[in-house]
Amino acid sequence: MGETAGEGTMHIGELAERTGLSLRTIRHYDEVGLLKPTGRTEGGFRLYTQGDIGRLMVIRRMKPLGFMLDEMTELLRIIDTLGGIGSEDPAVRADLDGFIIQAVERRAKLQQQLAMADEFLALLRTQ
Image (cartoon, rainbow, N blue to C red; front, side, top):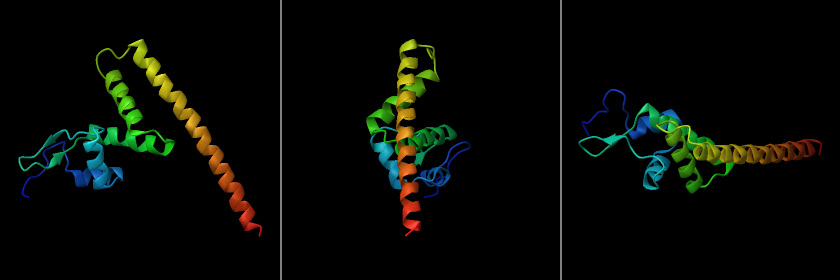
């Protein structure tokens, strides 16, 4: 196992530690195409960069809002497009705005659920 990550790269274990995600989750994201390793060592070990951490954090933040894998893939495509040439494409911006609206709506639902959970806890504590 003598390979080491080069400057600016890290193995999957370090990526997992830095993002709080499991190795299994990161490998699953690779399998479904959400996060491809930036490279591989001669021994075939996955290598990741700081940019991959950012991508994983976007995925991690979408999960509690109930976004499905295909929606995550689409949003990551939008983010990649906006970060590159043609970032002012109105259609891409409109797609991003759609995700923003969905995220706001889903966040509001979560807030309602938290409020109900707080009410339930208060009720239990008065018993």
